[in-house]
Image (spheres, rainbow, N blue to C red):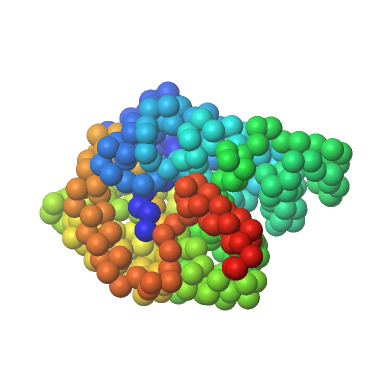
Length: 368
């Protein structure tokens, strides 16, 4: 089980002071969060990809390459790589380069993006979103797995005898998660390829999350990648903690109320009942996170949001201290306790490389 954080890199005013950080401050804060996440023993740091204000992470590979040089162990991921508006050739080359620089500590979460105006900025039509996601990812897989690619599709110019460089580290492409909130087609795509499915359920009730994950698990087994229980599921989460729950509620309420995606509808307490948002003590975060398995099954990756909404870097770092010292050690122990024997850990470069070498050994052994 992997535990980590993801950030969407929003630039928002502090709800108590009204001051918003500069873009420079916010970018540097994201790096500080990544370094702190490794320091406190988390497994993953992930950054979103946005090309519109109020967000700053328009170049995830630049950010993650910088973080790779300042960390040694933590997995570097994206909370969305826009498979719809990015050229799959550029994705193949950029993330293979990052994979080499980070010695394999890289995976990606593919997504379509949720901001309509972005599509025409990159010469695309949002009405083609699903078809772009399917076609572009099919090409990306070939670019990482075939030395020479001849290809023709609908949404980009053909390729003739093209080789993407550099090749993936050890000829093992980065592992891919397909991130989605509401699209069953993306769950189907993840299942078809035997990739991971990350349901970023931070805004959705558990009943919807359960339906999407059950669809993915069923189709993963249908395509022969393993049992439904072995399907590779990840979840999002959103936490704000203090030693006293009343302090947590009082401090986070202004953040919730001014949020363009959380506030303005139901109360914070009702929102917490319906979604994974947990505002309270570390013990309450542990208790609620353990319930995710009731509707998601035994899953492999749990990522939390601890920043954004105008929270100061100091406050976000305090959240990481509590995650690393009080929350994640207990979650590791509890999630491992009842995990079925046939459910492996989340994929890493080392495990994917070992699986490939094992497969080659079995294929060359006449007894096997």
